Amino acid sequence: MRNIREKLARFMYGRYGMDELSYALFALYFVLLVVNTFVNFRIFPLLIWAALIILTFRTFSRNIYKRRLENEKFKKIWKPVKSKGSLTLRRIKEIKTRRYRKCPHCKCVLRLPRKTGKHTVDCPRCNKEFKVRILC
Image 1: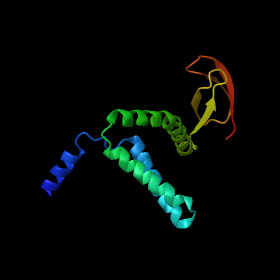
Image 2: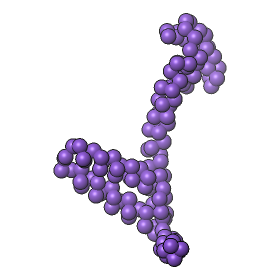
Image 3: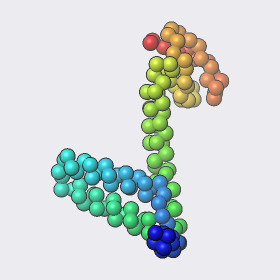
Image 4: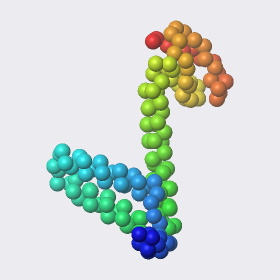
């Protein structure tokens, strides 16, 4: 067992390995695989194979500089999507205790306690006052 591990470590030396884009391709591969079992479109097997081939190529590539640039581009696109999703999940978890409102001046999202009625709120970013109405 140890001999196999050493051979694999020697083989992977100088290769790029897994990064965030690789994990996203891996997740896409499995999502497409599951969707393909329920919905039989001719394009899904091609997309599944394409994701698997790109994932394998990126993992075993020796051109680390280009793979790193690809990963940076992916992270630049993925970061806003991920932050929007995490904010939505947080809103759902705190729906019984908190309300979220946007500042009309700087568009900052404020997390307010759930107290019904009209309130005056100070924005911590731009220090402007504005009125908020929380219904329930």
